[in-house]
Image 1 (cartoon, helix red, strand yellow):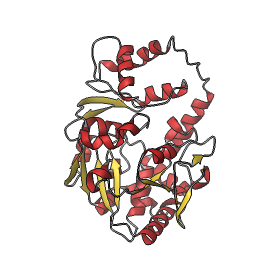
Image 2: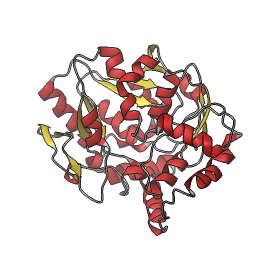
Image 3: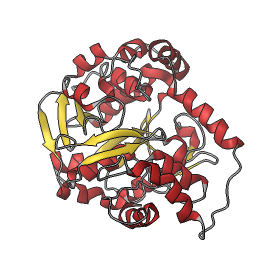
Image 4: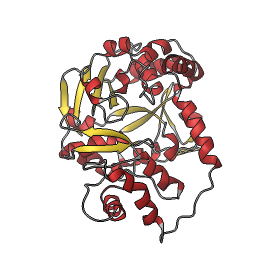
Amino acid sequence: MLHAALYGEENPAVILTYAWDRLLTDPLPGPRRPTDFTGLERLTPAVWTVPAQSRPIAPAGSTLPRLAAETPHTLALLDPYHGAEGLTHQLEDFVSHLAPESIDLLDVGGDILARGDEPILKSPLADALTLAACCQVNAPVRLLVAGPGLDGELPPEEVGDLLGPVVHAFTARDVETISSVLEWHPSEATALLAATARGVRGTCEIRDAGLPVPLTDESPTVHEVDLDDAASRNQLARATMSTAHLDEAEAHSREICGHSEIDHERNKALRLKEQQPANLDPATIWAQLDRLITPHVGRAKRAGGSRESQEERFRRGKPAGWMGCRWASGSAARRARSAERAYA
């Protein structure tokens, strides 16, 4: 979506990304590495692409192969298991072999601008490692933040004070390039970015904790941020710059942030493993969704999307998707059905 808006659709991009789908898609905690896939293709000596025919090796899961099949871009895998030093080597190898015209580091929400000690910060490690690596690459990297506050980590007002000039403001036309992907891809922040580009305003509850996220006129904007300023502010990024193993980076996260997001995934995976899966009964599923959604109705304004509802659907054997709706009259179950037709 951003590439088409800034550079046009004629020349597809190479998108370097983690295979880190969390537990909605991948029951294994932490990110996936190249050895977790079959069918990867070597792009450079240190970088592998994830083509449409590739597959994660069970029990691992990944949305990347399907995403590769439905986008014109080349998806390349970032492997953080050798810490920031390993990521820097991958990026340097990519730059030296392909000589890209430009390099943009995109973060949706703005938690990459966190110090690291904010109590509401949930997932700082992946961003910190990427930031640490980009600061050490011998090539210009532009840091962009889209959808300030939409990831439910830092408040929009705190993110807003750190942003530079507006590079782009997404519109409904921009969303057309990824509308088919949004029908199945379980990314709350990206779905909210698309929703605000389409004009949705109000409050949305996301994640399993039901964090309220305001959807405002600022939400569909993309800002440039000075990369060095972000690294100077981000304590975790600075601490991980010389790490050679993911375990080292995790230790820094526990020390600076008070937790590691992978520890959270490990604990959550254990809890889910101990739960007995419920049978999906079409006769009762809407009543169950009604009980799940009703407590949120009074707090929601015009849009609702909750990782809790996604994970409930996931446990019951239904594909997880972003759920959004504009509240209307009738029961919560009917609202849920309308939302599912629109977005899920």
